[in-house]
Length: 351
Image (spheres, rainbow, N blue to C red):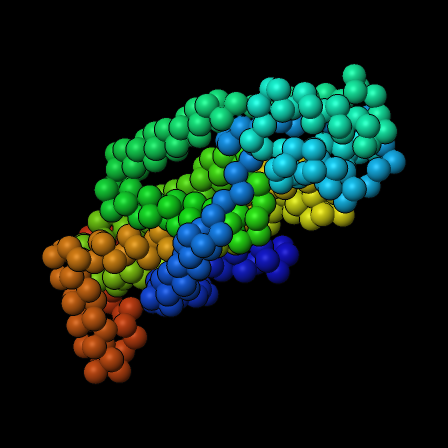
């Protein structure tokens, strides 16, 4: 067995572990700081909305010897608007200019053909109206809202309302950070970005549900024992799935990183950036929130219950009594009719 696999087995059995829940206020502080930074960036710089959302024209040219810088200058001079020019793998250019109507686009196309030394007929022009972009934006918001509502309903039924609330907060946390990064770096927001956001929300939810499932199983009949508090069972659940979460996150990030840094960076395929950045940041934020935010939030909500408060008092009292006698806190823990709570949750009996 590999070292990582051996560590995972020990985490699963509760032989080793890290106190994620006990240090939850540190994680909350880090998340609040990152979230505030994202919100400030969004408020100050705003989002660089793609042409699909604000309308305009996209011109695709055949192979040309004109540089991106000169093409940008020519496009802005001809249109009077800011232009985004990207070099294509075929040697042609993709020129995006917002705020153009049909008549203006025709005039710009003629000027571009002359300045770029290509035939006007070989330049492909696609027009996007602002009303169509507004419809796309509204549908994106509607889809996101429906997704959130369905998530809360499902988790409330499958688990409990506290887990549904914690998962919703974690999803909003992931969304805010991802959108804030877009505002900071100035990448274009396109329909591909929306697809990426919805994808990472599903992935983040998957990781969270895995931990919640372990917590649900591990906390069955928890009030019938005096060995573990609810927060300790939750912490064991996180540790039990930690290596699995790390493995799946790393495996998912590798191809996305290739798209973002190699495809979008070194090869200049800028159109990959809109979806790959949302996936990369969202996957990382989702893994973080699943481990450091969602389950600790459940603990904070759950331990407000009178039953969990009473359990914690019994556990601490038993440990204090055992310490006074010089015994291990676990000595005489489980009788034949007292269940043992374990990390991944199948109640068992001490043999």
